[in-house]
Length: 139
Image 1 (tube, helix red, strand yellow):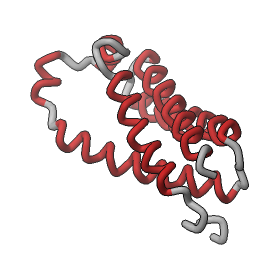
Image 2 (image 1 turned 90 degrees about the vertical axis):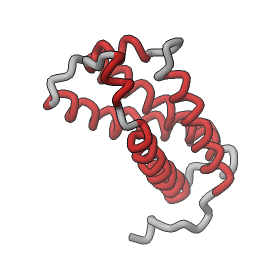
Image 3 (image 1 turned 90 degrees about the horizontal axis):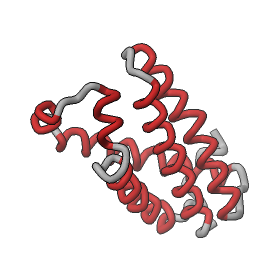
Image 4 (image 1 turned 30 degrees about the vertical axis):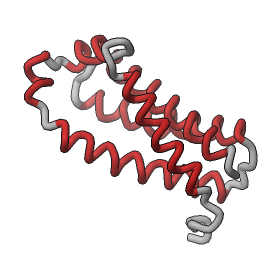
């Protein structure tokens, strides 16, 4: 896999993108954002949310987000993307196609309605677009 190389990765851009995705997620899944419609769509009650293991959830999110941003940076470098705009569009397309596609598959089999799927898909596409933009500023 010649394309999979850590050479040329703008590590500061990846770190800043990591922080930016947390800021976006904090708003997106807050009561001021889409938390209540998402909560209704997935069928979680306030009591279930209080009993949730948020440490595990955040731990999984940190690992998944770090891996995803690393792969995004590797792909941007391997594809020769050299502008913030191209990186933002690439991030959005990857977020919508791959992460959104995964939500469609998993939510379909979990019998979740489309509201949760679209809230999560829109978040992921936006997060990867912003991440691409930030990483692209350092390419």
